[in-house]
Length: 331
Ligand code: NAD
Image 1 (cartoon, rainbow, N blue to C red):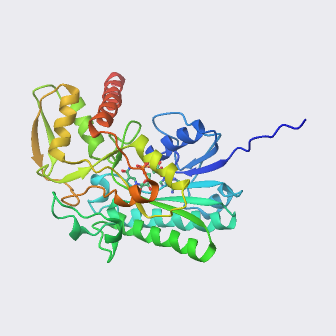
Image 2: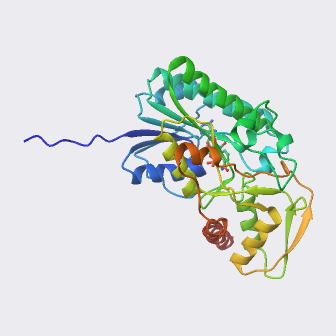
Image 3: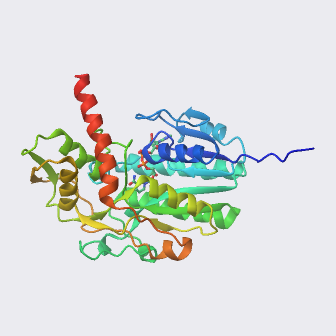
């Protein structure tokens, strides 16, 4: 008697050596996928469980053509030249950020189409929203439909909105199944924490971990600007649900738990059991207020993130404290 073999789905993760891509590979492997990961570098903080991990530059057409050698069931495009405020908002990397990420997206779509991939996920960002809707720290407007007329506050945001449109154009003209999420400040262990590309939760965890109780830490700006942060596990849950749905987006994947940066620092100090004085200094900041608007995701996917910021921060702080300790030991 013939036994029915369960077919294994295959997935391609671009940006698999990065923070979100690294976690996504782990999740897809747990779900039973065959996974090929691609990145210009290997993951810095953990060994990738990908079935194949190819190191190469996705801006290079020849390399991209090799990567897209089969009609993948699912492609996740997470590769980008990006970082936190210290990278995106200084203006020093604008040309590279736009050029590099746009070229990766152009190649992924072109060679993905030629390879007849079944569907593709694109990671857009909350940074696409107009700056003028994010001036009031207590009342930002980040409803998906508010994206136009476009007026992002960074070139990173402009590249992302161009990316969204390009993915939508491929859906329209070539029938490619596209799913687009706008991520809002994703955080967690195994992400940048000390290389200039770290975002505020990781930077604050590092500063608190490095400081002595009763000492001080620096913070860019007055700390009254607001943000919301989403823990990595819930981000991936949203991505997987979006990819399994018939909804193409763009849709926010973020938390509605909005806090000031001062409050964020207080939470980290509480987790660490340390009391520090905050020294407010000049630095690149971004908009005054930003938080996810989850009405559309609730409606379309019947789901939204629910985990508490404090819980995700506790796990992230534990990991960063360990990194700080290991670095000290090295010296
Ligand atoms: P990350 O920087 O950790 O990961 C991006 C990866 O892309 C890196 O590993 C990098 O080496 C790789 N990459 C860059 N250029 C490449 C190239 N030319 N060829 C091959 N690989 C290349 O960032 P992340 O936080 O994991 O973000 C993943 C995606 O989600 C990005 O597209 C980012 O813009 C988007 N996003 C992230 C957040 C967030 O809060 N982390 C928020 C909004 C959007």
